[in-house]
Amino acid sequence: RKFPPGPTSLPLIGNIHQLIYYCWKHKGVVPAFDYFRQTYGDVFTLWLGPIPHVSICDYETSQEVFVKNGNKYKDRFLPPIFEHVSENLGLVSANGESWAEMRRFALLAFRNMGVGRDLMEERILAELDVRCAEIDDDAVNGKTIVHISDFFDLTVGSVINSVLIGKRFDFHNKDEFLKLKGLMDSSADLFTIFDLTVPVWLLKKFCPERYRRIVESQVEIINFVSREANERYEKVKSGELTINSENPQDFVEAYLAKMEQEKEKGATNLYSMECLKHVIGDLWLAGQDTTATTLVSGFNQLVNHPEVIKKCREELMRLTDNGSRPLSLKDRAESHYLNATIAEIQRHASILNVNFWRYNHEATTVKGYPVDSGSVITAQLGALHVNNDIFKNAEKFYPERFIEDPKLLNQVIPFGIGKRSCVGENIARSEIY
Ligand code: HEM
Image (cartoon, rainbow, N blue to C red; front, side):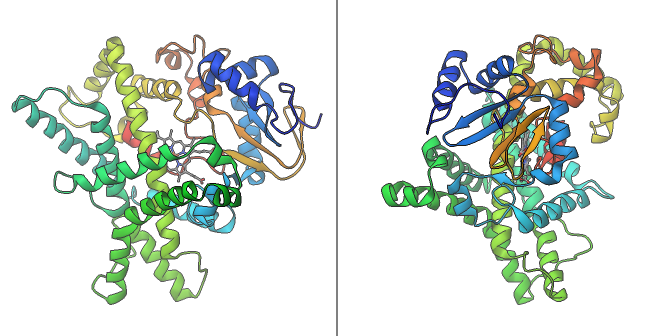
């Protein structure tokens, strides 16, 4: 009675059995959440074991809770093993002062890279030029098949690496990327729902081998992505390298400059190499698959909808004087059809089909329902994007819906909402565009 409605729960397991059943019945977790929304309303509760999970499936309520009352919902509810590995450092699996400082810093560093001269855009365009030239060369040499997920994986990885440490992946160091991608994939494969829910002590005691493999794989990724930052740090320390703090060329330079400033001021000790390792690891892990999968999904939609390609092309040819100049991020204000297509791609792709949960520390009401403290709460992005009441014929790929009703664009929130929304939103939007 202290929570929004939901299916009747059982002691200990809560609603886990219904969740499994409806995922099976409706063929996926997003349709299962959509079913719960239709049955219990836009805000409903599922008990996963002893913890009540409140899902919000409409934009207005999500805005009310996570933006207007955003300060109350800053803390992410984390699987115990994530908390254990991160030691509250970094961006994704941290809460409190360190997370807030790193988030502020990351947003500012990314914004500054786009001031004056848009470094981000330059790097994305340079990357795309090289990649497309490779396709042309291959075609000349008779290779006419491109594996699209490899193509986008490498392109996205290269842009992230270039923004973070100023180095893209080319044929000399492609193996570095493949090694990292292999590490990330095998680490993701290791996790099961069991590892994500059980307390760490239990995992350690009863499955020590599993525990060791999970922790080692995470540490290996973090060490791998941060090795060049470490090398640079050593060079700065030995005086071999100086950083122009007024004009950092990449994220790591900006961080090392900030670390130095903080040290001189004798201020916080939040900026450390250990923390930088986790921040870079998080930016990689959160930014690689999400963006690459969106691009692959978009590519597939376009292949299946040649009429959409035709309209996009007509618009872009008009904007770029018949293709006589490259498309620029500045064109976004005028490219209404391409913007609509991208929104439809992201709505359809449903990259994060179950969103991360936040702690609800105090008893409150949401859309007229009580929500007790000790629960967790989220804007359920996947379910929100397939809501037929908002997006008519939601299963249909139909960019025109946003031309017919431009206000609908606001209701597509693939990057989340509020204080924990995506830090890489700008980079991802620029890449997708
Ligand atoms: C299409 C691509 C992307 C999508 C759909 C996406 C989506 C999201 C979502 C839904 C969240 C969680 C929001 C929440 O908890 O409510 C998130 C968090 C995050 N994303 Fe992204 N993301 C994308 C690309 C990126 C990129 C390129 C980066 C970095 C370069 C990035 C870095 C992060 C980080 C660090 C967080 C955690 C933020 C925090 O907890 O404060 N993401 N993203």
